Amino acid sequence: MTTSSSSSSDIPHLVDTPNSKQLIVDGKPFLILGAELQNSSLSSSEYMSTRWQNLVDMNINTVLGAVTWEAIEPEEGSFDFEDLDKCVQDARKFGLRLILLWFGSFKNGLSSYTPSWIKMNEKRFPRAQLRKAGGILQTADVVSLFHDEAPKADIRAFSALMQHLMEIDSPHHTVIMVQVENEQGLLGDSRDGSEAANAVFSAPVPEDLVKFLSDDYDNLHPHLQAHLTHFAALPTAKRAGTWASVFGPGPYTDELFMAYHYARYVNRVASAGKAIYPLPLYTNAWQNSAIPEGQEAVAGGGSIPGEYPSGGCVSNVLDIWQQFAPALSCLSPDIYMNDYDLTFANYRHRNQPLFVPEQRRDAFGAIRIWSAFGTFGAIGMSPFGIDTLEAETCAYTKHYKLLSQVKQHVLEAQRRKDSSVGFFFDELDVPGVDATEVKKVTLGGYNLSIQRAFVFGKPTAGSGMVIHMPTDESENSATTHTSTFLLIGSGFQVKFTHPSPRAHFTGLLSLAEQRVTDAETGEMKTVRRLNGDETRSGAWAMMPVEEPDYAGYPIAITVPMGTGIVKVDVYALLKEEGEDA
Image (cartoon, rainbow, N blue to C red):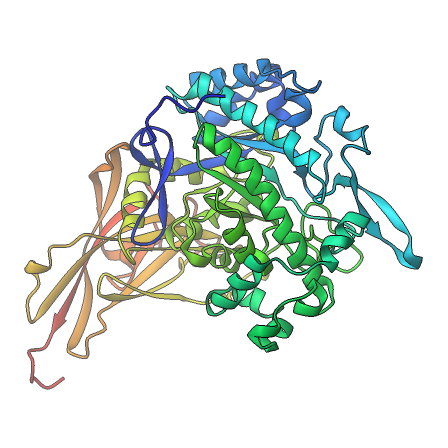
């Protein structure tokens, strides 16, 4: 196989920023306004021909879809890319980018997308064994990590895919990233109980793992440290022996064992493909979380390893994946039941970029993208199952429309240190009772208090971000200070306060509603100047919703949302040094 003829700088890639990383496509920073298809949608170009325009109408710029091993290599050594080629061509025709999901050896803790010649040949491709009550072993629907034929076959297939992508797409960059496997890990047990797995578990822990955990202990994620108490208590000289003796027996030792071997397996596959066509590669994780009593963990949740896929790149073992799968550009959470902001923070560990390839497709999920982009510097967000929704009713349509207009300002803010904050306010469970905390941050030399927008009637959900715009500090003096902010979104309000004890007044110098005239450059023009009632008499920068609830109040002082983009100039008056406060 050959390697890419395009220079490495031409191929989509990640670059470092002061805050994290950004994705570069066609030489420019790119913000992924993504959406993932249902699992098998991309396997049919005929079906997709009925959905492309709908995806465009949702203001999506990147579609995530699966390429399955069983579809491209139905017979060993014989590859069929006909439907994939048509989908890539059609996406390009509609101006959409693609992120392909390689459903190879693993999909949601199973091997359900492997070809029949893998499934039917257990001798060549042994399965993992689940340990059940009474010492019974149950054959799992997933290949075992502890035999070499499955990874070698996966490597050949993934390499063929990357070779083909290089040949058909390297001049175009329709495909900008590739996911390697999907939510890998073992379901039904905390580790493989097969004879081969038991032999490895009873052998000495690999020296590279012991050295990494010992040398880098202080930098490990707290969730991993919490499960290393036995290891940490051992003198360094005694950190040798079986997995149980070094880490202590239990399901989290089993999870560590599986994570180490899953990471190495996936890294072998990823490294082979990356050597041919070095697109950014990543993998994703089914998240561990408590589930409601009486429910089962189905495609999300689970409190202990085995209820969720044991060994997948959850926060418990994120460091293991980062160390032993270096061919991956990032590790990504699939978020459905977990707290979004906490998960975002977990997956910025070691300053890796945040990309969420799967999340809720409803309004609850849609408003949370603002926090990801504005606070956590995400390179992209993507709801799952988008192709079975219509643009007119999809919750993401309006949010992606606004983000597509201001993307340059978002990307520029992500390249500046501490320049933006994103947030969301959920629908109220009880009308009139708002227990939402005020979000307090410091940007551009001012303290900001951000809260749900005031209305006379029922408050609605709100979301957005505040960006501090570059300001010429030479215009400030000993007695005055100004700063400029861009407010984007709806359903919130912002109060600005200068933190200096010499500041005796902070006010709004001007509020100017903006319309983007060129989304590619970020150029804007003022369409309306706001003041008076629109600022609650100068106290707040208001970002109302489209249809505020007046609740019968006779004075309409709450204006509806306009463009959702407002430039705010803030000023503070400061007393002279030594002047009485």
